[in-house]
Amino acid sequence: MRVPLRLALAGLVAAAAFASPLAHAVVSERIVAVVGDRAILLSDLRQRARPFLLQIQARVPPGAQQAAAESQVFRDLLQKMVDEELEGQAAEKANVRVTSEEIENAFRNIAAAEQMTVEELFRTARASSGLTEQEYRDEIRRQILEGKMLQLRVKGRVRITEQDVRSAFDRLVREERRRRDYHPAWIVLRVLPGSSAEAVEERRALAAALAERARGGEDFAALARQFSDDTATREEGGDLGVRAPQGTQAAATGQREVMAPELEAALMAVEPGGVAGPMRAGDAFVVMKLLSRQPSRFTTLEAARPEVLQRLQAEIMTKAKQKWLDDLKRGTHVEVRL
Image 1: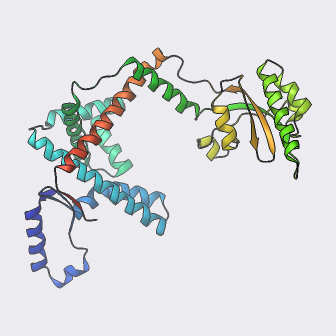
Image 2: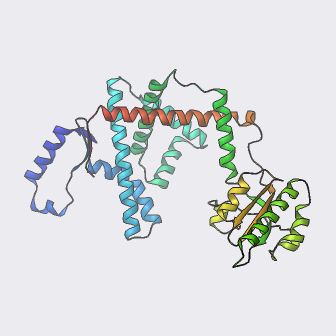
Image 3: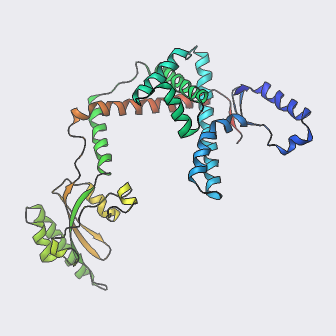
């Protein structure tokens, strides 16, 4: 519930004046944020946070870690509620509203996408997140209202050029590459401890020459067998097997080994068959070849165009929303008291 500030203050004062001694044992109501002339109450925040707190309590062990996670939920959710109040006040001024039919249509669409009835959708939401039907309806209403206000703000201003599409496609491909397994091989030239500058330069020059020979078409495996100092992979032509990129689930769970970050970064910059290096890695110079990479799901720009356009539109809307909220905050008194 969001109420005018003057009424909220009056209610709190009255509650304090008539409270019995027993009421002191209960956490009192208070205002946690003010937006314009309206207040957001602690009870509102707690009610909205309930599904998230239940998830935290189920997944995070009690103690400092759980308390920190709950505090973060309250802070993030209060900021969201402040933004929603700003949007709601702007919608009132613009005479923009959400009808019951729009809400029902939204639920029918969501249920159809999930291949279930609306009633099943409500039951699933209750079981998975603790949301009551009314809370779910309130959330959908807020989402529809925000969508309407954003459309009103950016309507006719969205211009996506072909260059925008190509740049977004390239970015999408690069992001996906960092999630795809890859198969590298290497040649390792050790630098002995205490080596002179001349000896170090000699090893670097040999590594550079081997890299050029590999780029020129010579058999990388044969070069590794002849020159590599890594006894674990030399006889296999420097083959390192399939590796997972840093930060992927396969890497986190130990399903696949990973490369050192600097070596992985060099391999991300080349296509299968490409050679990277030489580069210094600890006590060695390394030359690497990317034997293969897990195929991309993005075959061509045209095949990916619908997804790229959807992403671009979402990015535009996100930026438009943030700018709009910043403008609203500059024109409205906002005070967070949590």
